[in-house]
Length: 231
Image (cartoon, rainbow, N blue to C red; front, side):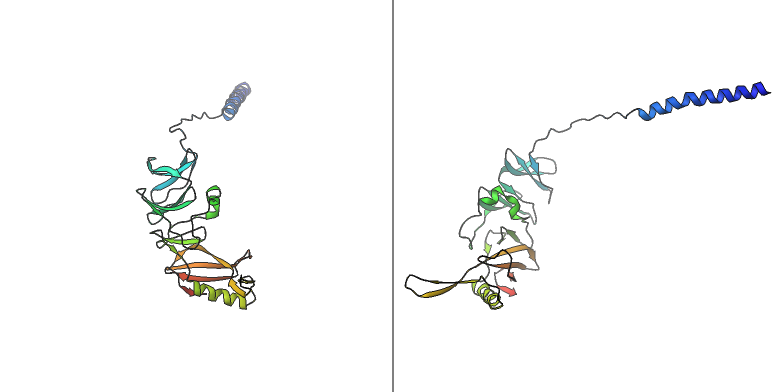
């Protein structure tokens, strides 16, 4: 009886000893991984999809692809924004443009600056923020544009009144006094404005800066015609 019991114990110990190395070997064995490249990388950079299109960069220029990966707008832009309301803000050299999903371009017609978008924006597109259309308006480089490319400029008299109010409150920098060629002392407004955010409920935020100020000294809301409706 003792021999039989001892034999049983020895057999159990032998089975346990054989099982340990096998399980240890299984734990140490790394799972095999197979990597298969389905599509070779074709673009230098890419944005996210918006309204079925994404901006991608190839050979230093931006264009747009659809969700199948097919290029639908040629690679010709130095900056390409996201699509919203069927339109996107793009730049070629220092020109600001609006492009639709067919690739049709509408040039921006700027009134306040008297020229085109500054060329430093091409080298530093982050300064643009994220210009997207909201309620038919896009805000880029501190200026507001409608879908037809026309700039929305704040009413000058109403903006001057806001500058006067800021100046009377002790927020200096909105006026400069100098002597003209005839020797007459002249006072002129010396400020600039920047639109910010996006159009909401038909209104656009305008920040007013003194000529030498680094922070906004006054703000107002203007409508799509450029009239100041609320300070």
